[in-house]
Structures are given as C-alpha cells and as structure tokens.
Length: 495
Ligand code: AHR
Image (cartoon, rainbow, N blue to C red; front, side, top):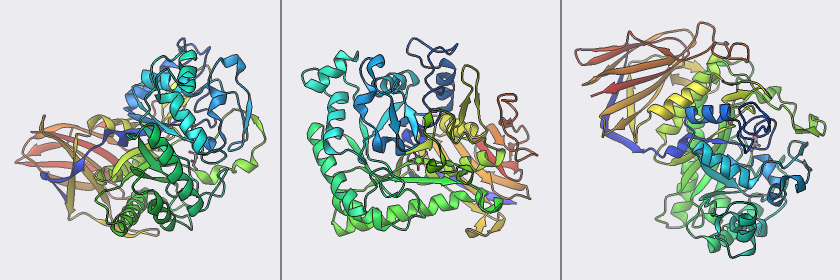
C-alpha cells in the first residue's frame, strides 16, 4: 500500500500554461498534409484542415514553436511570404526535401490565431544572423510605416503579428545543424542578435539555445558559456530531449522521467551558477521546447534520405507504454513549474506527433494525445508538491533504484479542486494507493491496457482511449485507488 500526501500549503509554483506547447516544423508531413492541405474535404479558404484544427483545440495546446527545428537553420523567411505562385521551391538542407514555400510566416500566424495558440518563433542563426532576425521581427511586429512593416501589410496582414517569444536559433551545439557553432561562437552571435532584437522591442521574451540533449559532450559547459554572455539579455535557456527504449530495456524507458528530471536540475544548477558569478538578482527560466518519445533508432538519419518532394518522415506510431511515458514526462515538467515556463511537445502532427492524418483522408488521435490533453485540461493554476510513502521501488539499469510511483498535483483555489497526476512505472505489479482527502472524487481517468503495445491506427483510431475508473472513491477521509502496471492516471478531487 502506497500513501500519497498532497496539501495546498506545499506549493511548487504557478503553472505557466505555455507548458502545454507544441512544435510545428517544416519536416515530413507536419505542415503539408498535416495542418495545411488545400483541397482536403475539411480545408477552409486558407487551406487549413479543420479536422486537424479541431484536434489541436481538443489537445489543449497553448503555444507553438515554428518553423523548426533543424529546418530553420537554412530557412530564408522571405521565401515564404508574398504571392504563393511567386514563392521559390528550395532545397531544405536539414531534411533534404524540396520546400514548396506555400506555407510561411503569414500563414502560420493566421493558423495560430485559428487554433487559439501563441506563436513562438525560431530565427535562423545557422546560415543567417542578426540582419535576418531583425528584418523578420520588423516584418512581423512593426506597424505600417517601415519597408518591412509595409511589406506585411501589402501581403494581407494590416495588423502586426505581435509575436512575443523568439528562439535564438535551434540546436546550435549539434554537428548536424547547418551552421553548427562552438559555444563561444554561438554565445557571441546570440548576444548580438538579442541586443539588436531588443532595440526593435525591449519587451520580447528571448530563448537562448541550450544543449540538444543531455548526452552531448558539451552539455553543461555549453549552457555556462552561452549564459555567461547572454544572461542579462535572454529570459529562458532551451532544453531538448527525446526518449526511446534502448536495447529492449522497457523498464528504464518507463522511468524516462528520471532522465528528464535530472536534465532539468542540471540546467537549473548551471543557470544559477552563472547567476551567482554575475551577482545577479535575475532568475533565468527554462524553455523545454522539444520533448517527446521518438524511436530515433528507426530513423536512418537525414544523410540516408534522397533529395525528394516533401513526404512522410518519422511518423512514429505510439503504443500504450509510450503514452504512459509521455504522461510521466508531463508530470516532470509540472514538478519543475517554478522554473520551466515553456515546453513544446515535438511535434504536433504526423512527425512524431500526437495527431496523425492521411492525405485527403482522416485525422486521428495517437495514444500520446490523451495524457497530454487530459493534463492540459485538468491541471489547475498552482502546482503542488506530492509526497509518496510506502510505495514499492524498482531497480532500473539506467537510473538505479527509483520509486515505482511518479506524481504531481495541482490546485485551483477558486474551485477547491485538486488534480493528481500519477504513473505506476512497474511493469509487473499493481499498486494500491491511499490519498488522505477532505472532499470526494470528481473523476478518475486512466490510460493502460492489457496489451501495452496497442496503438491507434487509421483503421482502428480508437483502439486505445482513456478509461473511467468508477471504483475509486473516498471513504472515511481516504481516497483509495488501484493503479495497474504501466499506467497513467488523473484523479480529480473536489472539496
Ligand atoms: O523534431 C525533430 C528534430 O529534432 C528537430 O528538427 C531538431 O531540432 C531535433 O533534433
């Protein structure tokens, strides 16, 4: 028997709703035949798929990073604005596909408005630099009256796009990145780009590139070098991480939240080290602007791809276990809500996405859609610390001995509702859980299956769905729930 204690007095921090962000890259079918498909039966006058827009709203996504990813590091934003029939077809060096440029800056902002999400823009610091960044900022955010503001107006957007969050490049530490840089090279460029962008608008939120993953040889040192130059100029440092089972070790994969947790703690420590060096009062926050499960072992790498038209790329089909892991990663982000202010599930549609589409056909929810949508829907404004006692522990090859249960909670002082998010990471054992409470159970939704490899497909799109657990109830001030092996749960308690 495990006991979970939660109390509104034990606050982690306020929940920034941008934690429920996602990511749209010009990669594979994320844009073309994903969110944008003129001629699709559900397409609106702009060519935006309404079936996908409906799922994006249901997913509860709040912010979207765009246009890459690796794609951005050789992207000329000017190619994607103006009359569509005059836009060039260009070879995208990141994914070696021919980019038709039928969807660009103005289309993305229009799509974001329809989806009800805040756009987050990444600028190209690979093949371009300060000039391109401030030009794009002028095009997007200045009113009519400058050459680029006027150009946006002429292209059909009279009002400024008013994009508030800007990423200074993408994964610049990665040798695969077009225009890859050393930490010092990137730090100088990011510093000067941030300086110039703040001349246009001092109130922007800027994100400096952190490491591409915690396994990079420069992890830690990269963040320190970049922040020593940019600490006063940026608001956030980015983190990226993708998780997958390695060498068939499903037990460690189910515990991937440990890896994310350790990465976040390491980046916070590094940022705070720079804060101390600078005798600064400013607290830097984190933008975990790419995270997900990604079976990278199945991806041949971009150099294994022929030059071709845009088509399917890394369309991973997610299992029940993958959904449990995604749920546990969200729990980790919430546990760090005091420092993680932005997070982007990468990506949104088709390309390692929670939403899948068929060109000209249906759109459906992958398994990982559900823990994301339910966390976004039920998480309240204040994140609370949870304490678990008496629960079993697991031995994992990757992380050593860890608790089987991984949890967080949120509280809404207006409604008195507490939402508990908890994962049982044991592959073999169910866990009986007790939660001392004063109210009653409003709902218990769970994701698990006898067949942990079950997936949703075009032919069987609803094979995996959340289940309502009716047996969970409060008796004598204690909520009792049973958590099957490898399962994700939302337990909402009303006062
Ligand atoms: O999301 C896929 C790719 O993963 C992105 O383009 C890149 O930033 C990361 O390496």
